[in-house]
Image (cartoon, rainbow, N blue to C red; front, side, top):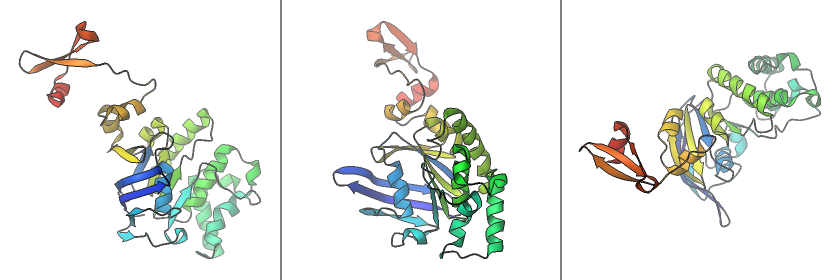
Length: 278
């Protein structure tokens, strides 16, 4: 586990912006949810951290070390994709053990077994270790993919829309389980999602991204109740909020009211809103 610092990351794909001047610090053991619509630059951010793509500008530091010159395999970063990317010819145990048996780790088989069993229990699939991947449900496959990433004990855990392939009921259940697992794992995590409910229920902080730029960073309450812009406000909530043009009028010296519908109606503003608008 380690602190992660992104400084001025910029990545363009030809004339299309991936991310631009993206700076973010993720504290050790913090769970940050990155939320935004399709094409916002969320997956690009994960790929830049993992070393899958190279930025035109900016740096990535993990535990204070600039890892820009390192290959993906040398960054100690684990990434889980929405497609699971499991090996269908292997059972659950061998899928989870695969990175530990690779030339990078080459752990003794006793340690491999102990670590796989440990994380299989955390993921609640310890009773499925000998089962083939093709015999698993989507939820069980997702747990296997998460477990395979965690057995490596990475510095940072990157999750790219891991629940998007699940049906609504299972997604809700897995969201609750992920929230429970957070306290057990204590791994620095960046979780990408287009679902604001996932972002709010899982993240210690939420990073709102749109068109490659950070729009707001804050706790779930801060982002939901004090959005930095109408764009952010529109992204949270279902149905979407309604916005009305209004004219502010002073009333009684220190109070404000908003005239709406061309002056046909007036709303008294609470003191907290009046202080912001004055």
